[in-house]
Length: 320
Ligand SMILES: [Zn+2]
Image (cartoon, rainbow, N blue to C red; front, side):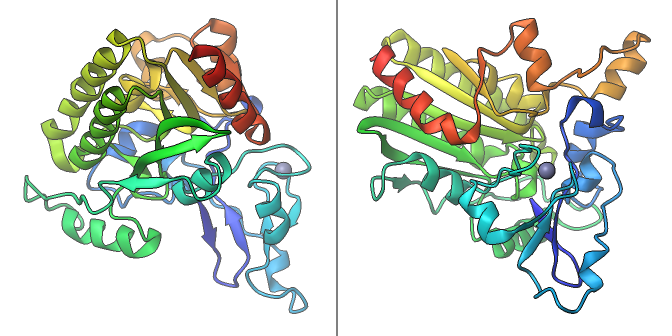
């Protein structure tokens, strides 16, 4: 997610997963799920103060054309950033991307056919916190142009037919409520019927606490659908982007036949501080980063965003 600053320079928010740069994730995930806290900017999620660029005061820089990398400080034109698939050309930091962008990077041109695009969340608990759930939904719908936090459909990746689901961290931290769970489940079930593999591009702060138990039930529902998909001998690949946490990581995001992560992605269940306080032990360096989890064997490979399409394409050919 990037946040347009007042003067118009975009500054990427602070989910910086670089091992050295990992902030002490204060009440990380739990804060995403905590309904009383105004939801992302992700800067709040990971508790680093937003950086304010000094260059935005210079009058000779046109507004909204530059973004400063919050990892290395490089100023990058937004055009260049788009050409680089939102990866910093200097330090390789992978920025947050929305669902539409990711679909355009992965699916062969014109092949993505979205399903269940009109499915929207219901405020079943009549939730009232600092702001009502329905107000929050409306605000994010306006901001992102999406009805909820995942887009699903069928597409071709280098000619391989797949069910493709992409979560959008810009929408309420891509938290999983009933709609996210239902759309993903339907995608998996339809893919099973069509006998095509499933690819899920994951990102999430976890279950959506505005929907309480209904959110948690999605963990079982999506996992069961994947089990039936696997029984038919069909492949499932998940791609973990920054960050993939909590209830999503504890369900479909960790069930891939192959689990891929983007470089530097923060991946885990509970936040590091909660774990540290519970276990009363110091956590290893780089804890909960993709690189650490690759070494520990939880994920299978780390793939640069530019190589993701060709990697998926090779895997799909290999597994079909
Ligand atoms: Zn950078």
